[in-house]
Structures are given as C-alpha cells and as structure tokens.
Length: 242
Image: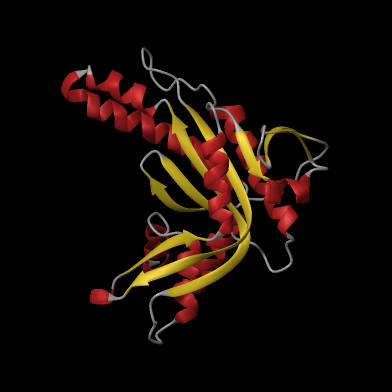
C-alpha cells in the first residue's frame, strides 16, 4: 500500500514518460545529458485572457490572489481532463501554458496518435472556449498548436544527482509555430506534417502564406477515447507493487 500511495503522489508531479525512463535505467549510472528519442505528437496550449483576469483579480485586494489561483486551477482542470482522456502526458506547465506529449504504443501508427491529439484539442475548445469561471471576471479561452514527427525528451543536469527534462525537436517547433499563428482563443492549428497524415479525418482551412491548417471539425467517427494515460498509470502502479 505504501508503494501505491508513493506512486500516486509521484504521478502528480512527474510526467509518466519520465518515470518510465527512470525505471528503465534502474540503478545503473546515467551519463547526462541523455536524449530519449521519440516520434510522436506534441501539443502546445496557451490560455487567452490571463492578463485580463489577473488585472480584474488585482482589483479585489488581498483576496484577489486567491481568486486568481481558483480561476486558473479550475480552467487547467478542464484542460487536463480532456488531455488525459485521449492519452496525453503533460510534460511541462509554462506559466499559463502547457506542453503535452502523446506516448505512442508499439503498435500505434503516427496518424492514429495525431488523431487522438486533435480530438483532444477539439474537445477542449468545445468545452472551454470563452468559459466564464467567475462572475464579473473575463472569460477564458485557449489557443492550441499541434506538431508531429521526430522529437525527444532531453535529460540534463547531474550536479548533486539532480536532473531536469525538456522536450526538444521538430515536433515541438511545429507546435510552437502553430500556436503562434493563432489570432485568438478557440483555434486548433496543426502543422503541415500533421495535416498530410490525417486530412481525410478532419475539415480544415489553410493558414494564408503558411503550411499550417486550422482544424474546424471531425469528419466521420473519431478514435474512441480509452483513457490510455490512466491505463498506463495503472500498469506503472502495478509494477511498483511487484
């Protein structure tokens, strides 16, 4: 039971992919920096309206900070649920933004993983676009960019036996560029690399002068959301108990 509680608490702070890599390395010494290569999907999402809501909460005086934390936590909670539902692993929170990676199963194709990420993003927009968390406070929305292809988790550090991790590579660059091309919250923009692999599954419009596409809607049946991330977490917890 102690191992199970430890695992559950650890997963609140550390991405599943990082934990699995650490378990794979085991007790052998690690030579940092170390690159964990991947070919998968990266999402970068950024909340719109954060500045306005911060200014509104500042006018509330001492309780404004608490109200701000409440608002952001509630909104992030909705984001996290949609991401976890489709198997995404949140790698970093960057202020009011987040970087998400989709771990791919051994038999899962890249187009399938891309479809999961886009369906997650569309669900985020359907549930959270122009969402009012508190009365008399600006609505919040989110801009989403998605890239796919080669990337990796870079583990750096080693001083005092401490290490940090970052996402690097083309898939992240694509996601950042797509989010940057968003002109307002509520948009889901994907790279040309993504679009070429899933164009039969979604309706989209091309961003002028760019090889990027704004996803409008899902065409036909989508991929069933089977909470892959929860399944993977259960497997990991089971592994700790052995």
